[in-house]
Length: 219
Image 1 (cartoon, helix red, strand yellow):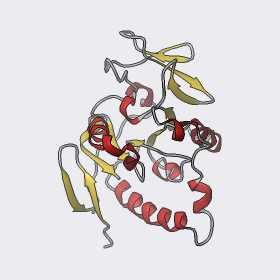
Image 2 (cartoon, rainbow, N blue to C red):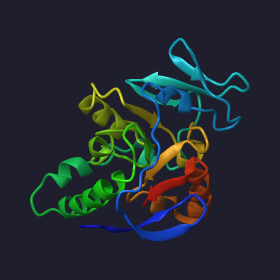
Image 3 (spheres, rainbow, N blue to C red):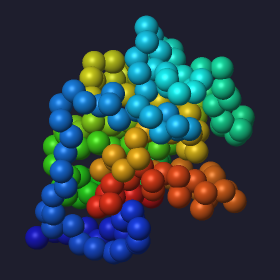
Image 4 (tube, helix red, strand yellow):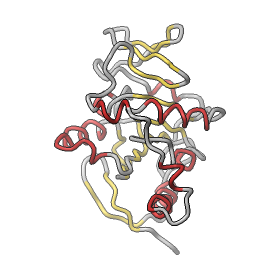
């Protein structure tokens, strides 16, 4: 039996294991919006018109072109990445003999193996998704919260995946993710955490709070 040896984070410690079919619990169909919480007060966001807002503070998400983003707030302090045209890794991965093509094949194998230990309808957070070269694979049988600080990348991906009702797009920084604590079955943070530079430990501690005790972190 083929087993990929994958290094992954559990919530409280790092282990190395072989994936051979252990299963984690999934979430109920149609319950994805209930996992969106205020990053300040940690209360569930309530839908009001076209906004998701916190009843306890002024935090609010608004939807622009099917993408949720903070209202009247700075999305990220990394202006270069936020304001650029965004990544084109999906396009580059389709080019023969490109580095991105080889990288994508490697990561796809890891993702396939990781998904084997999740039940269908699990909740996955894809950090730094860019133009979504792995989003469809992650969302084949699961719910995916797709995150990036670059609106242009998410906009292109949203248009590509227009009919995917199991995917939600959130444009915000790693340190202000509006997601319920201890709710995520797997976080896919492929080739993105190193952009946090000297804030790596702070960012990591924040995203691990969102992960279930037996959840996975692929980085």
